[in-house]
Amino acid sequence: MIFCKPNPAIDLDFILAIKDSPSAIAAATVLSNLLSINRQLIEPQSIQKSLRLPKQSVLIITESQLNYLATLRLHGFAGAVLLLSSNTFTSVKKKHRLLRSGAGSHDGCDFPWKLADLLAKISELVPLEPENLEMLQKELKAPEKWLQRQVKPRLKRLQQSQENFLDELDEIAIIIGQVREETPAACHVIVEIEGYSAQIQQHFQQTVEQMRQAQKPEKATIARLQQIFEQWQKIVLGSEEGLGASIWY
Image (cartoon, rainbow, N blue to C red):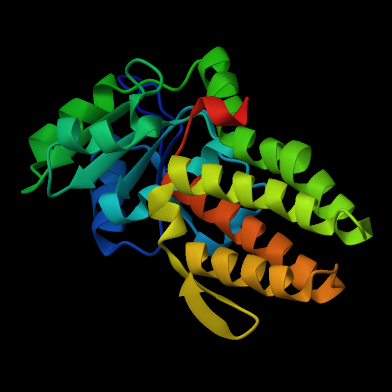
């Protein structure tokens, strides 16, 4: 962490960067030195924890680091974001709902990154307003709350069912169909579960088929199905896919 004397011309306490991007670190260091604003580097592994970051700050990130932003917002980070990208900011924010939240809180510089552009952008950025952050957090939490409300009670009933086991399994299959429809990209991500690597949708399909063949509740298989849903939820959070979809409400 680098501490500097405050710069009265820019209302910022810190310039932030995540340690796994040399480009973001270099930009944060140059701006910190030029503007006499404190610099703080963030360990990637600390982002999954309840990391407290100053509101009066700007996070400089690259396009490959955008998967961190949802978790940071979920944990209460209200600072502004400056994106370094090889694409125009207009094109990137079309794909990322988080970059469209809060007027003046997100901006970007496309390659080649020029110092004059970085200085101009950072001087105009403002933190998210509390109500905007609260609304964004509500959207980010929605898939997890949907899991708690729609999926976990059904998995519990599935484990306890006997005569109506296949009917309960049909309900789960319908929910999986909704998941695949709302978040197709997440369902195509390859993950490892119980030592086996496959797309999320393949894990769902194979596990449900195994349960149909068994025609009775098996604790281990139901636990695997729950694990698949949890893996899916983590992917959806990082990718922002399905953010704000009506299915969650």
